[in-house]
Amino acid sequence: MTAEFDLVIVGSGPNGAIVAEQVHAHSPEARILVIEAGGTITDVPGEHLVEADESAMNASYNDLMRRARQIEYVKGAASMNTIDGDSWTPQSTGVFPAAFFGHNFAEFPGASVAWNIGGMGVHWTAATPWAYAAEIPDFLPRAEWDADQETARRLLRTSVGPLIPDVENPCAQPIFTALREVVPSPDPDRELGYMPMGGVASAGRPFARTGPRDIAPFVFDGSAPEVELRTGLLVTRIEHDGSRVTGLTLRDLATGAEESVHADRFLIAADALRTPQLLWASGIRPAALGVRLNEHASIDGEVEIDAQRFGLTDADIVKPPTGEPFIDSFWSPSIGEARPMHGQLMEREFEGRHMLSVGWYCSTEIRPENRIEFSDDLVDELGMPHMTVRFSYSENDLDQIRRMQDVQQAAANALGTFPREYREVQPPGASLHYTGTVRMGGVDDGTSVVDTDGRVWGFENLFLAGNGVVPTALTCNSTLTGATLSVRIARAISADI
Image 1 (spheres, rainbow, N blue to C red):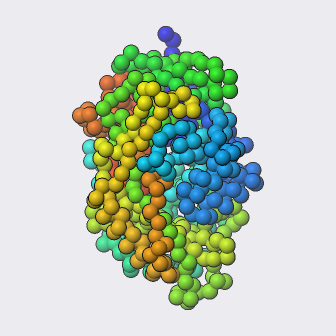
Image 2 (image 1 turned 90 degrees about the vertical axis):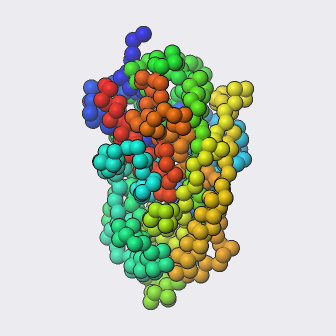
Image 3 (image 1 turned 135 degrees about the vertical axis):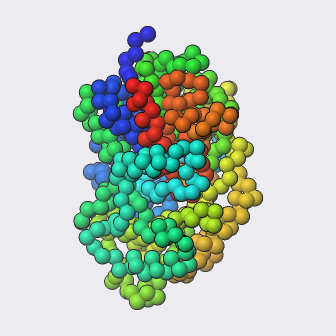
C-alpha cells in the first residue's frame, strides 16, 4: 500500500498547528496532510476571533469575553453560531457543550468542544502561564523541558506586559501592591504580575491573540505545496494491524461518502475528549485510555475596584481600544505545595463599572475514578462511541477548594468589597483545561497511553498530542504545557522522518 503522505495530522487547533510547524521546519520536503472536521468560522481560516474582520463575530467575542466568564462564553458562542436551542449539525461552527453531541456529561457539565477550523485556538483568552514544580513531568529531562517550553512560548508568541502598551494604566501598580501583600510569594519570580499572554500588543489596537494561523500560516493559506489542509472530514477509524497504523477512514460530512488516507505516520490532536474516543472506536484500548481525567477546580467572581481606596477616580480608568475586552490581565502564580493554586485576574470596564474578575484554579488529585467511559452500543450524533464522564472531587480536593476561596476572598477584599456569596465554584469541565485522558508516561505500566515521544505504547507510527497528553495535575492554564509537549512530540516525528 503506497503512502500518500509522510505525516497525517488530525486536528487543526494549536497543538496540530505546532506539530505541523515544527515538522515542516525540520523536514520541509515532508508531505503533510492536516484533517479538520469543522468548518470555517472566519474569512481567514485559523485566525483568532479578536482579529476577525467580520464585525458581528468580533463584537460577539468582545461582548462575551468582557463578562470574563469562560462558561458564559461557551454558552454565548453556541448561541451566536447558528445553534437553535439544543440542535447541532456538522455545518455548525463554534464552541459547543459536549452534551450537544448526545453524550452524558452530567458529572462534567462544563465540558465543551470546538467545532471549527483552528479548534479552540480561535476562541481562547490567550493566557499562557507556565507549569511549576510538580506540574512539570519529573520523568522528562529538565533541560529538554525548558528548551521545548521556550520554543512553545515563541510559537504561541507569549509576552508578559500590559495589554495596551501605549497607555499607562494608573491602576496597575496599586493592584500589584495590594494583591502582593495579601497573596504573598517567597520567590520574587512567582509574585503577582502581568499574565503571560499569547499574542502581540500594538498601540491603538486590540491585543492580537495568537491563533493557529499565526503558529503555522502555511497550513491555512496554502503557501507550502507539501502541506495540505482538508476540512469537513471526520476521522471515524484508525486502521491498524495491532502495532502499525496503515490508514485512516474518513467521512465527508457534507455527502456522507467515505474514503481512506494512507501515510507513514499519524498524529491525533483532536482534543482531550475526542482523541481517546477515536482510539476506542478503532479498537486501540490501552488500560489508561480515558482514565485519570483531570481538571483543576475553578472558582469565579468579580469585584468592583474601589478607586478612592487608592487615591484614584473613575477618570483614571483606561479605555481599551475598540474590540479589546480587557484593560489588563494579571497573574497570581502557584508557589507549589504551600499554595497549589493560581489566579487569573482580568481588569475591565463593564456597563460603566471598573471591575476585576477574580478567577482562581487549584490542582486536584489525579485519580483513576475520574474517567471517560465509552460505549460499544450507543453512539453520538456523529456515529462515534457514546461517552459518559465520571468525575468527582476527593475530600482533599474539597479542602483545597475551600482554601482557594479564602485566597480569592482576601484578594478581592484588598481591592473592593466582595461578599462571601459572590464566590462561585464553577461546574467541572468549565475551565476547558482538562488533561490526562491519553497521558504521557515514562514506562508502560498501564497508567499512561503514550511514551515520552508521544507515541502510543505498542505502536510504531501512531502519535498523540494535545492537553490530553499532559500527565500532571496543573494549577495553571493548560495551553502552554500541552504546547511544550507538542514541541517534544514533533521533534520525535521529525527524527523519524
